[in-house]
Image: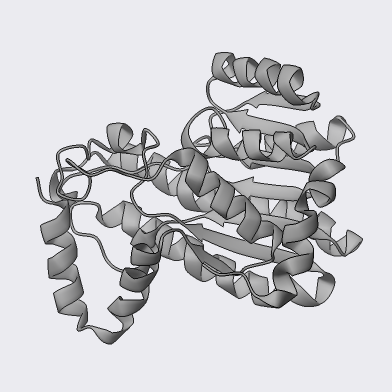
Length: 276
């Protein structure tokens, strides 16, 4: 994506902008979330990092403190639990931390026919990908609107633009993230708050392992963009106040092309691409 002239202020000075800002990043123990934490820290920011694995978070904490002298608060939390978002929010408030950037990155998928899939895993997916993301946004957005400043980035996917046979629930959760984020971006713009939806395509992030997707045509044998490249792109788009940020020119073409294709054809093509 080519950034326009009105974005120049953000892109030329985003190191300075981030210097005194604190970002809360969910799913920060691996993949895109970990790289987003590194991206923010190397530009002078402090962090609240959230994920299930306390050991991985503490390892990242030590890395960022040593490399960038960042202040990093670790919160180990399973975001699939019903009250996870409010517990994290309360911990942040108790620590006296103001969250300037909220990055809802945590999420996961599953591969297989819906009729054969595990409901318990899907219920956890809906909780993490939709419910927890929405509640985090509600809690921190109220503070941002009161301050009349703040940035939110919700990580969706190019999956948000169409239905996805063999990953039906995952695709549906990401469609929700895109629709929800685009709507509230419009609502809060007058308050000096931006909401960006990052839509990466298939990325070398460990997601495929968790979703058992490695043998599908979508990823097998392909050189995927790195998590670091996606994180850098998304971070810059957030600071530029972009509403929708699709990583990769081919992904952008495909995501927009589905609007002009018969929906039945889009579903068939998606199924073909994801079959093993």
